[in-house]
Length: 294
Image (cartoon, rainbow, N blue to C red):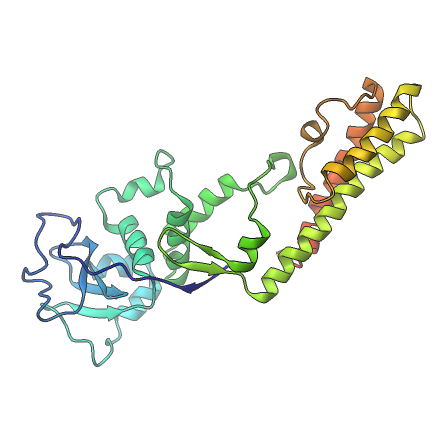
């Protein structure tokens, strides 16, 4: 999804939480009479450069930024815009990021609890991870970007054996978009929306194919007469309960946990056939959603 709009946080009368002694906005570093900027939560009293996003200023150390980011090193070695004047000896650079994104990525570099962003003892929300990932990628801050990717990989399976069923977005959300807790609206492009809806259609067909294929194969070698009746019942159950589902990767144990009236031999055969089709579906996910496999 791409962000459609973002809401600046309201200007406030306090500087928020900063390292060192708390000061009022009217103190020497950022006098509202001389600046339209509001001090952000990342504010180092002896910092030597100011980054501004959505009229929120962050005062940090130029050297540490350049040490972590070649992009910032290049940016901060160039002069700022002509209409942006220094404040109390600090060069001011205005960025096009959201204030929330910049605050979170700078917190991971400069806050007293910065190390917790790289520890599994701290659980980060998805919005925190996305804020680490976007500026981390944009400014080539490799340790922050890589940590966000590592955490996402821990949550999202890259093999079928590790896959579990995830919550899915409704089609209404896919079409109309999602507004996050920062007030930013995210909406799929027309091309990505088409990929998602077409992928859903193909997954629905794959689920039906997996279940029907397993039962149809069983019909040719049922072990006792009761299994034939159970097969008819299960085929009806498919249309009653799974025709609109696109969770084609749900494992056979969860899909058919009650045995369906089959004997143990038939049930084992059903699950083997179903899991074989499930594996085929996993291998074709990129094709279903028109994605590059790289």
